[in-house]
Amino acid sequence: MSFKGKIVYSIYYRPLSWLKQVRQCGGIVNFILIEKGKKNMAKSAQKLHIKKPSKIDANVYFLTGKKFWPLTAFCMYSLVKVCNNTIRPVFIDDGTLDKELIKKIKTQFPDSIVKTKEQIEVLVNELLPPLKYPHINKKRTIYPHIKKLTDIHVGSTGWKMVLDSDMLFFKHPTQVINWLKNPQQPFFLFDPICSYHYSINLMEQLSGHTIVPNLNVGAVGLKSELINWDKLEQWIGQLEGKEGTSYLLEQALSAMLVAGQPILVADKMEYIVMPDKQEATRPTAILYHYVATSKQWYYKQAWKKV
Image (tube, rainbow, N blue to C red; front, side):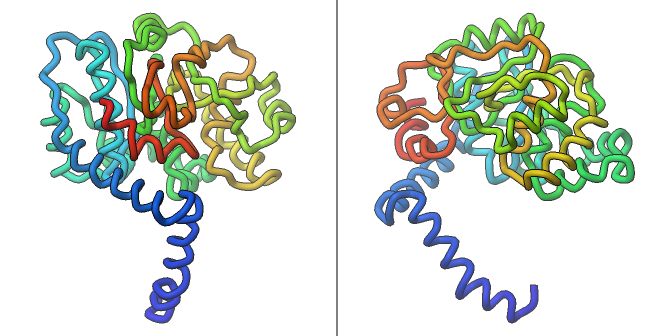
């Protein structure tokens, strides 16, 4: 960026972005409370630590990095608490983990596995070369969410459950544990809003199957070798070419990948996506996924309950 460009950004775009965030938070007072909650949560996340597990029943996967590590740590810690420390995390580097943070991660979660950017790039370059998969590779550079598919599943086999970091467990997640022990079909959360951005008609036309509405990928279980990378490459180009880019692309692609298959959707009363203030303040369900407007309740209230 040129010197002039930096000045314009500093005096115009940065304040504009800040004002937009304030409006989205419902005003300056709530914005300050949320930011204070974020800082306190991040400090507390540094102190989270589990004992080395005596046995490992299953793995769960997280895409994480410097920005998201506090959230990831709290999510995994909450899962360990309700599962007697028998679930091992596999942390997938989003490209921002450094040696110091990796060392910290291994200290906080003994026996965890960390797959670095360098390890992942070798597989991606070999199995998803840019000349053959230009859309996938482009999205990896500008849309980190796609890495929940590419960086976790490429070159691998078997079923894997990927968890988003902005979630907390408060009770033993029986459906999740049963799936991890004996996965037979894809697993999703239930989204109270059908959030694919792309029209169901277009998604069905491209996939050739009926699309199940309201799938949420906060917790998603897929079988690595069943992901058709050629179709994924085509779908990205066709979806964006006809209906534009979207933050929800990865969720739409996941729904298309499982179209026509029997799937398992978690109990929506116990695995809640976008909880309200009451549930965030006094959690009664098993799992909460704090998306959209419910993020404020995570930072102001929910993490403290863990």
